Amino acid sequence: MPPPAGWRPPVHLEPAPPRRLPPQDTAALDVAEQRSQRVTYGFGAAAAVVLVALVCLLCSRILF
Image (cartoon, rainbow, N blue to C red; front, side):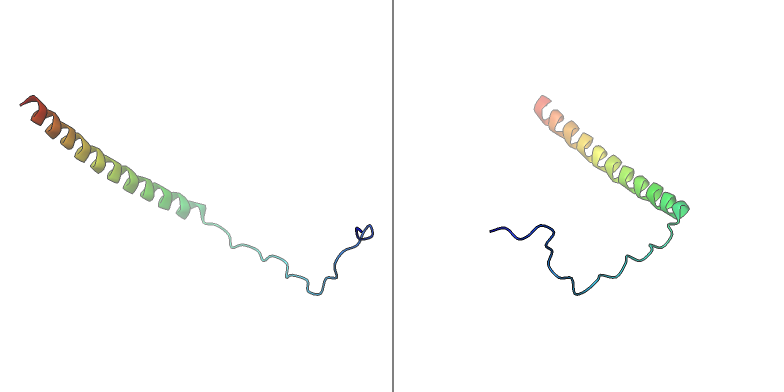
């Protein structure tokens, strides 16, 4: 047997309203993002150099 229409369980506690978030410093966020992008590109370039060196080493072993 379904409950009557409009039936809801009793509410005993009301949650606190959400608080305001602190303002964002967009200039500082942009600087941090650029710095992290530079680090990411640096690691990518280093990995690419290592991979190219390994491919050259493997190709030289096959040819000679």
